[in-house]
Image (cartoon, rainbow, N blue to C red; front, side):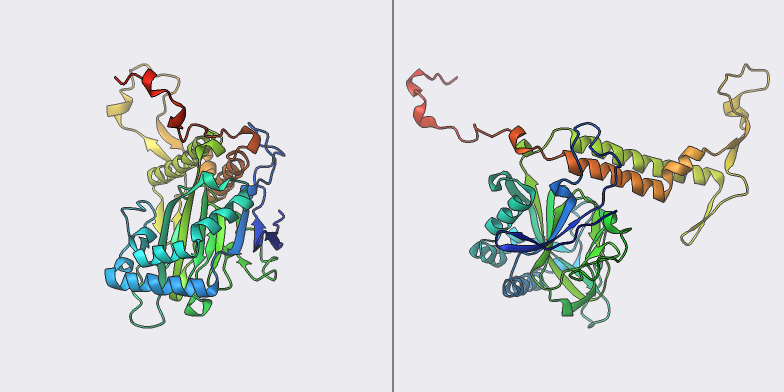
Length: 368
């Protein structure tokens, strides 16, 4: 599996692109015949803010958090499944005003548009928030409300995380990608950003920009405080192929069900969990012997009738195993990234967004 890690020039931005490996072995996607890689297969590291701008944002964010206490508890209303200790930027007038002053939205959307070939008028913020990750070890005031974030996929097609804290303020952290965990450390010496599936920025203001549909999480902050500015960018439906996301979600759901079925089967087997280890019984299966449900010996048996010891299903073991789950989920992710963005010549322009009332002869219009 080859991973591209070569600096590239995007107009006024120097970026480091990291292209995740091909997971589905077909040359083209099965339904829409799109090749690997698509633009969405590439994760980009870029300076979205200067160090001075990041420092100013950090100061404003800390002051707002000090006054409101918003970093002392996780917000489970806005981020229900994967809650974070954060606040939306729109709630902090000083930070919102400063970002407007430096044209943050305009500059970010221009870069996203260049990297992923999307017109900026088809981009909008689904969410923009400041989060705090802290580990123990540097001062008594660092309450460990959140030191990591489990692997997940975002609701947005495009996401980014800018680190506002200088690297000296914390240890650990970084954005962790499942798709990069098995590529080894052979790229660590290039810009020193990728190690064991974790991408770590080198300075305040630098950010990781990627498709939100690539499974990712936040690696554990072991000490200090890591403050981030995170954005979820919505892409207009006219740019996306209908049904692709729904199909991927169904496949991921099937894997979740397969894992749950394995758990149920293990419980019926009488498995015991000791720490992280699962202790299996001598024979995998269970005994069906209740006459309440099986009936008496004189009753007619169907061809699917089972009685006595019933062996566990090997297919349940296979589909519920971590290796199978990881491979299948990454294959589905690969196909989604190939197919979800429409080529420019297939995108429907929203010609009726703004109706020009000047050309309407109102004397001929009847309002009911």
